[in-house]
Length: 364
Ligand code: F6R
Image (cartoon, rainbow, N blue to C red; front, side, top):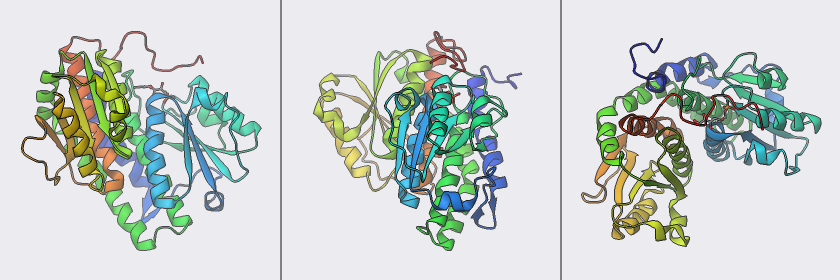
């Protein structure tokens, strides 16, 4: 059942290229995005003035990437909420808003409650869900399935990738309807999206370099992840994944925020992983990396293939395949998922079933 892999988590990471292909290719035709969402006509998306993405855990982290994509491509404002916060903060919802619920299982209690709250306010709801026929899929006005197939490991990996894929489709579709992208730009992005599964495959094949990093980190007591912009959201997801499966305490920090307090925790040998996939922010993140290095941190860097990395900046550099800047998270998260997996294995943890956790959280 594990298809020759020692754990479901590793099997599911290896399934990512196919899952993303299955999710994207039927929805891209002749340089256009075709969503065919049940009942959500293009006119409804066209008049959407604001989006609220509501989810928990990894699905919420996918939403954070979605915010960067939608805001940068379509210039539609997006708020991202943790479902258990959203439902109790009396959120301000406008009649032309769209509430997007993201959930692998489609059964998460707080996300389902947030969906019901939006419906009570008469706000249109769109579910991005993996499990067919699940509660969130049934109750939302419209559904975009992620089609990743079953995810067995408690730690979510391939489901996050397909959630990103769907969010990119929504972002490009919105941008075309809001005319912030020309037809030519839309078709260029569609082409890039169709090439993404190969890039993810390339990232999966970086496993030997990842294993070397895992060996170094396996006895760590704390790990810091730093990044800016969308890379910061990847830090949040990587940090969650690593602490979830390996029980190492981790923190994700916006790189520029470190010096406002947290840098006091950096001492000789503290592992710091910087994620810097965005060329425009690269020099800024590097200067934060130099600050922690000067305080003794052991530095690893995740960056693009073409980044011009100074020779002694980082002890380990994980290079991710070249992709369009906006789409970079889909390739960059893969080595970080593999890193969490391998560290957990080296520490002898129960990778597929971490302590205290359940795959589907149906209580609030
Ligand atoms: C982390 C993880 C959880 C889930 C969260 C939401 O690896 O799996 O954080 O992402 O419990 O679950 P769904 O997506 O089923 O609503």
